[in-house]
Amino acid sequence: MNVDICVGLAWGDEAKGKIVASLSKSGHYDYICRWAGGCNAGHTIYIKDKKYITHLIPCGIFFNIKCIIGPDCVINIEKFKEEIAYLTKHGFNTNLIKVSPKCHIVQDKHIQEDIEAKKIMGTTGQGIGQCYRDKFARSGIRAESVPFFKDYLWDGHLGGNILCEGAQGFWLDINYGNYPYVTSSTTLPYGACSLGFPPKLINHIYGAAKIYDTRSGIDPDFPLSLMDDPELRCIGELGEEYGSTTGRPRIVNWLNITKLITAINISGANSIIFSKVDILEKLDIYKCIKNNSIISFETMDDMKKTISNIITTECPYVYSIKYSDSPHNMDISKFL
Image 1 (cartoon, rainbow, N blue to C red):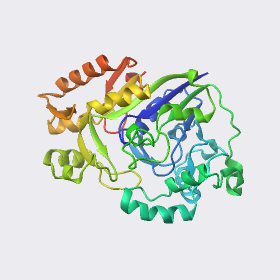
Image 2 (cartoon, rainbow, N blue to C red):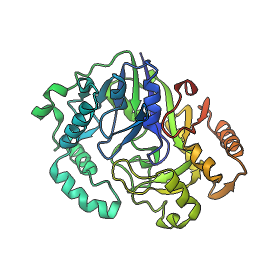
Image 3 (cartoon, one colour):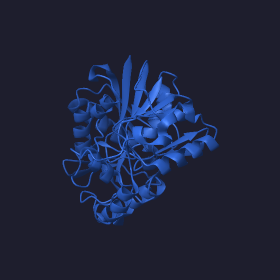
């Protein structure tokens, strides 16, 4: 009937998990679906102030909603088993989880090869790129041929209201990111159609961003010298900016509003949600980058007003801009 999508507008780590969790609480959705990536991504969410992290399985599992891992995802069987055990241990119904038979399997050889790539490209070392390479070379292994997945295989059915959960972010997309320092799949909303619905059913596209930018791994656009900036370093420490998959410290920079505008307009995001506002407020530091120049503000209200005005002027599809200052949760009533 209807499809909503949550997409990252930066380099991942934009609180998509919190947004999807907040939307899931509404009771509006019949399925929560993941459309791309593998265990190289991660979502951190809080349920009753208890922290949970998933890497493959959509956040709907925490709210008793059917969860689909789509055909353009890649799965590490051992990591999947670990996640199932983790969720079962904490009392969640893993019978709700289904895997597309067309998902490709990350093999040991992929991981071993990626360990070398990790040193050069800054990958997560999870074998994701190598698995996608074999998929497109038509030499991979799909879930339909693995006995373990027999009870998890999805029949391809979708109905009712669907929420699609993005992994990583716009600037890690295989096409739009700083190639070759990118992921190996599409992170843009159109990739969600691989789940089996037409684009015309897409309604809301929730664009996730932070009030400052962060990047895990290697990228010339995020030089290590940024870690020497005392203000940016304080933001990273207070914001606990460590990768949910690797634990690596993320490189922090000021919000690049120019790149954000591009991400919003190409992705078609129509509701923008900024997180981590509380971090800048605690430090009383307010800056962003526009056209390669740093702009400073006296207050967060000034920064919000400028950002909102720029987005409203330059992004014709956007009808809602929200700012979150909650470290753990988001009030769904603010975002619908």
